[in-house]
Image 1 (cartoon, helix red, strand yellow):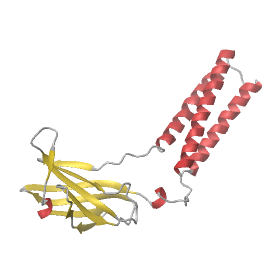
Image 2 (image 1 turned 135 degrees about the vertical axis):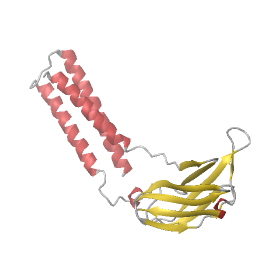
Image 3 (image 1 turned 90 degrees about the vertical axis):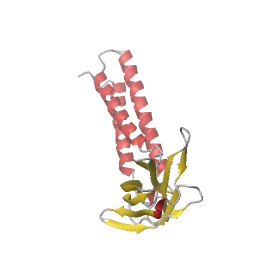
Image 4 (image 1 turned 60 degrees about the horizontal axis):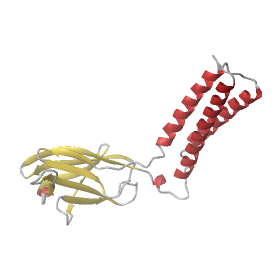
Length: 216
């Protein structure tokens, strides 16, 4: 196979790797989970996001129904009069009490998550004669590493090492082209394109490494 096509394939592969790792550099958009039970919308999430293991937080429940005009809503007061809540993790569960917020429809319960992973909010009972029986996942609890400074773990070092190896491979290809050890079938134009493509791929990988280092 012509070295030109081999280089194009490498550019595509390395660019894809850099893209995958760069995706992890994006700041996640946190959102509460909403379910509908007849006319009511029940939204559950954490007060502080991302939730961190060992740090006090609040589970927030928002219960609303449609307002008098389109696009509006009104909060449901005294929603937990006949409604029970329990937070679940794996096979464990804990009943919790919710306090009302001054803003109608909002309720909260303080909790200190002790393990990373997915928690569920279990709601059982009634809201104004409407039966509620739902389990709603809440934003995953993360380890303290997302807040640690200076960093205490080597998380991400494997990705950085892989990217550095990719750059080394690209540099070797460039050296072989310049030295004449390999040649392109299309002459100077193909050579220039190959060098240009390799440079772009290397730059993208370097940017990904910088982003990973900054994230740490």
